[in-house]
Amino acid sequence: MLLEEEELQRVTDFLRIISKLKITPRTGWIRCRVSGNPETIGAHSFGVALLSWIIGEERGLDTAKAVKMALAHDLLEAYTGDITPSDIDLVAKKETLEQEAISKLGHLLPENMKAEMLLLIRELRDGRSPESRIVKQSDRLDTAFQAFIYEETAYRDHPRDSVFSGFFDFAKEAHLDGYSQKLLEEIERMRRK
Image (cartoon, rainbow, N blue to C red):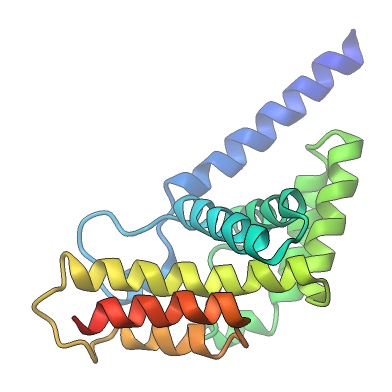
């Protein structure tokens, strides 16, 4: 009984820490001075998971694995913060910060889930499996789609070569597969309207 209570407390602590991602705005949108309520890390992870499911289905991949990987892809940011490519001083320390975060999060999870999550995070970092590549593509596509949403709504009076263009360029650099490329092209077509 004591072990069960300890495990419940650890899982509750995990959920408390991770739930902060649902209210933590993404750094890129803050730097772009997105007004109102900028997209949060948790909302982004939802978008990445949904895209990973859609693209994974289209490609006939293990969608359960891709969705789990997508859900795990930013969990470490609960400890590291949202490190962007422009955070040059932090990018160099990112792997060390992530290893510390893995250790902290790992202590809060049941052993079977801990092992699976660590494997998924490593696989995503390695980037060799089809599922990990889909999650990385979905990460970029979701960001481009969110930039499109900002342009379409609150920033519709801004020129299309606005500050958000960099997010579309970033998605193009992701070596998108055929279906992901078509999704990005469709977003860009809608953007030109």
